[in-house]
Length: 197
Image (tube, rainbow, N blue to C red; front, side, top):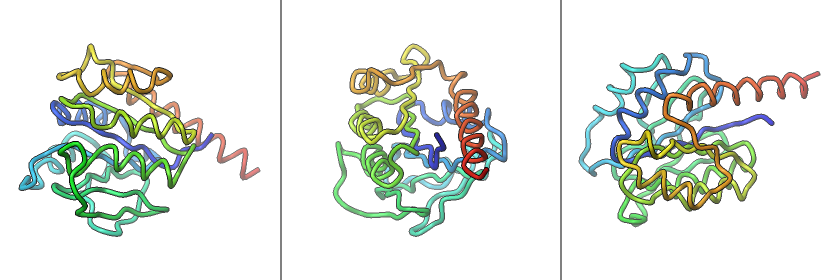
């Protein structure tokens, strides 16, 4: 089954985890990646610069109505919720959810509503439970769930909560997440070729 989006959420320890995961993906990774990382509302663009240093993918901070692009990592800006639309991203300033803006749950849920079974949700290290209900919603809509093994997380609270919310998820050590995403993307490419034929 082809996939149209990788929706990724993380909090405490997320920079290190994302550098390792994204560093394991090639520049031509065919599925757009959308990231919500909890950070302070006055955070600068250093997160994007540090991620760009770690990966051959193009890393950008989302601006309203940015197009979803393959080979790109779209990072939610500080103090905005990120919504996934068909082919593009939008930003809102609605109230924080679980004290977070951007909220992982909000982004995950919008991705699931838009792309349904074509969504891959990924939950990484973090110090709260944001993302668990959104990941469950992705699976309810027919998508796939990947979770960093809590034993390999800097802070296991977020992946632990996701495992409890989505017991059918694939739980993998951090260093196995990029290879798994590559496998899924290749499967999507094969499915696309079969459809084209």
